[in-house]
Amino acid sequence: MSAPIISLESLTNTTSSGQLLTTAKSGGCASSSCGLSSRPTDMDSATWEKIKDHPCFSEEAHHYFARMHVAVAPGCNIQCNYCNRKYDCANESRPGVVSEKLTPDQALRKVIGVANEVPQLSVLGIAGPGDACYDWKKTRATFERVAREIPDIKLCISTNGLALPEHVDELAELNISHVTITINMVDPAVGEKIYPWIFYRHRRYTGIGAAKILHERQMLGLEMLSERGILTKINSVMIPGVNDQHLIEVNKCVKERGAFLHNVMPLISDPAHGTRFGLTGQRGPNALELKALQDRLEGGAKLMRHCRQCRADAVGLLGTDRGQEFTLDQIPLELGYNGGKRHAYREVVAHIRDDHLAAKNQAIATLASMSVRGSLQVAVATKGGGRINEHFGHAKEFQVYEASQTGIKFVGHRKIEPYCRGGWGEEGTLGGIIAALDGIDIVLCAKIGDCPKQQLMEAGIRATEAFGYDYIETAISALYAAEYGIDLSQATA
Ligand code: CLF
Ligand code: SF4
Image (cartoon, rainbow, N blue to C red; front, top):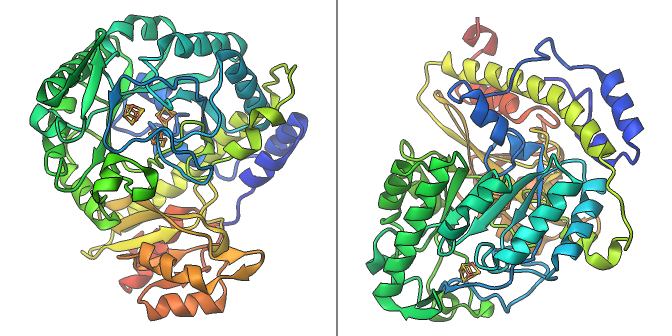
């Protein structure tokens, strides 16, 4: 596949919307596939309309679209053993962590500031830092203000579910189209090990009674959302030895109640975070354990595997948080919304997505036509747009794909410390990167130096820049064919 005719990087760095449109129109479409719908064949068009630009609800959309969170809801009505909202670190990326709490008016100013500058922005989410349904007045006021100013932004909310049932009708009335409920158990005996207490109807509950109430409210809230056609995603924190095996039952229960997606995330646990699990030495799963559980869940509720466990004030494409560029002190006090960049970007992306889909389908057809049984684990350095367009040394994460005759599947990501600091490779970080790439056969990137390439090779991991700027799937299918000694012209004949 040739280099991109329209570079998304040039679009997202271009400052004037006029320039963006000119780029789009003069670039034209890169293939004759222009106009194809990128809707998956197993999805109805109404559902596709809801998710096609939501980076969390569609893996494909996360290559193109960004979310932002506004931290307007600090209050919480339960305690999870993996949460400590007092801890704040700008470099820390995990739910509940935030640098700046906002009022609804400040949140509106911030959303406008981001929408004017980040053309990929498609979703506004409220994910704490406490619980958005418990701290409801501020959540509601924020959504109302933003929807008035930017009517085409999708509204999304994340909740522990305890206060959810009493707000479902208002969620529907406010046109909040996507809701996430964190459900870590459907058995209160398991819940008791995760939640020391809840605060419900002016009373504090502890022990198994607390977990039982929480479970009942979560199930009721999910059923009410499904009845109203609001798309739901279930987040579950995988806690080895506590609920890892139990999540199979959770997946079954939420599927029966209409959940659209199930997102199993690894527990993040460190004594420095001051959480109960961190202090008691409860470990999180490693990447291979997480993948093994996700693989066991295939066939149940559809899985989300591209979650980045965002901060409550995250901004940007998943995996590239730009929150520090948009702190309140950097946003003018008086600010009007200008949708020029967002609209121009959407117009261009519609064409690019069609081209990407055609390339992806071609790659999958190529794999299907091969009569080999092997599989490959491929780690990709990307800045978005579905292309291999990041240098090895700049990557903060690798996206991991599994290739087999049945297709090319996104199976997760591996976070790393970037190898390059100030233009030089850091030998000290390479060991960590190699450890993070456990189980990976090949790394694909836009550029890599001889030194890290050699050291990766010594650790049994090959790395190549030979497919730089290609579509990810196109490169992987060519790689797979080369790996198994297949002549592609024969395979696709
Ligand atoms: Fe935010 Fe969550 Fe909405 Fe996305 S995040 S409220 S659904 S807009 Fe997304 Fe972040 Fe994972 Fe959440 S990657 S933590 S799943
Ligand atoms: Fe923390 Fe969220 Fe749990 Fe509340 S529901 S304790 S904010 S993780």
